[in-house]
Length: 411
Image (cartoon, rainbow, N blue to C red; front, side, top):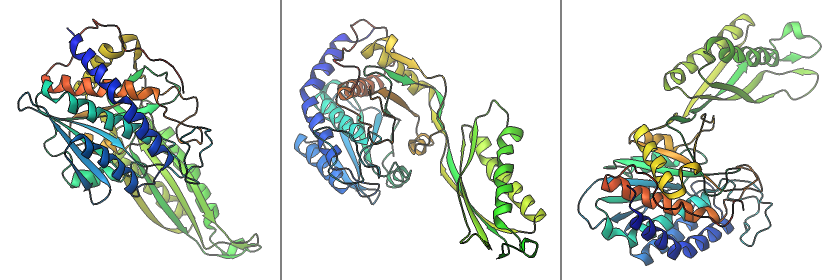
């Protein structure tokens, strides 16, 4: 059975700290900072944690990472981690809100202001309730998610040492406030890519027979790469090879010496991912050999596949059932081909990410996206209940209290 007294207690505590979380989100939103530049964001978070008496370590990973800890007073136990990202994007904000970005060309277009405020609010909530659970809750405030570089630095600095499970949420537009989306297994794609330089022989545009045209060779490569997905990979295994940049030439009457091509490569299967580099280079090498060109290829491995642990996904699902009502816990039918450096944590610790509805009508990474305030109470309630359930060993239960009510369904 669901502990209705605990749910009510958490709910009341969330409401008490909610104004601080909202004020923090507005402050962070006004002052966005790019990856590895989150000095002010980290300082403001640290000030709030210090005032509340929550122990924490700054400068984690040699950057602006913060790891905070709330120790339960009901005995020793496991360690449950929650993670939020802090960096913004180089996008000019078009929202007309009192807390609009004050920095030209920068904004929180992915909602990391909301993620950070949510995690601070959850830390304040669980700190107030620390006498009610055993074990430890660890809070990871991570820089540089947008360039998928922050997680590895925090991991290297011991941020998840001794952690038994880890969870993150991500605000999701078009999904109403008061709903969450869950999915077990592969949830987001690996995010790799390559930079290819085709080396030809330049010359006069009127005498192409005396040259080796790298543009023509590059076009053949771009076309042929599409057959990797359509003819070498099973239709039941999602994969993407998208050529996104092609630079060559200086004038209309000059055949270039070189052409540079850039691409992203995405998969949802770790084994398939391992074979993509060989497949891609085989195509490139064959075409260059046939057309008398040479090449240099730099293949970049980025974030791995984000694979949600089934047990932790169940914890999220059952918590959502209790807090929001089962009708507001949506089973996501498919993964997305976006990448997330939370995947690095999941390679080492069982965990999962889930989507939380923000009600915003604008997509992520656009000038009008806004995480909003209404989602904060929902996220704080979910994460607080989730942590206590994990640490007390209560992972499931039926709904025996009316679900959390929200006052609006969009921002």
